[in-house]
Image 1 (cartoon, rainbow, N blue to C red):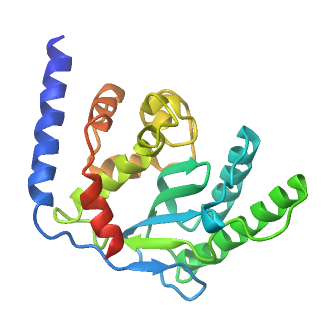
Image 2: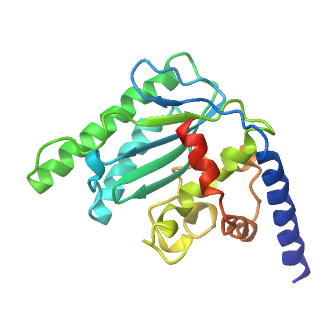
Length: 232
């Protein structure tokens, strides 16, 4: 239809603008390790990720994924806003926004996330009659600086990369086929409430319609460029 064609054109033009901006230097901070002492600055975006200790699997069933998501919801509540997430068999990715909050609330997220990972590990080990750590000792975090025209390319690339993880790993035939990411929620295929979708659409200038979002999500992500940021 004419409406869909027009929306497709808008998405393509917006992505081209983002790509052109992305050829310059992107303002993003160094990779950090989350600890009780790390300060999460207000009005900043962070890409968080952790994987199984020694690359081991950490999720074995649907119940495990759901159990972890409940832990994550509790850890984030009132401290940070989750904008995107993806759980993979041996690692996870989060994109979070730190809103203006009373002093200490955002930093509390560090401690509560560590508690969530520890609690999940205890539950999993008890179920499987195993011992030892499941995740790497500290969760890595990438600061995406103050969100601006310069940092939008990395933030948007990171957002879509998170949703494309399972597809790129060959675990799903399409983005919507992997239930353990927030893609379905943004695409209008599931009424998920973990993500602050309104905030993400505002900060990342995401398409307002489900159709526009699905179209943009299917565009190729410059993975090498993203990996360069993660190494800095």
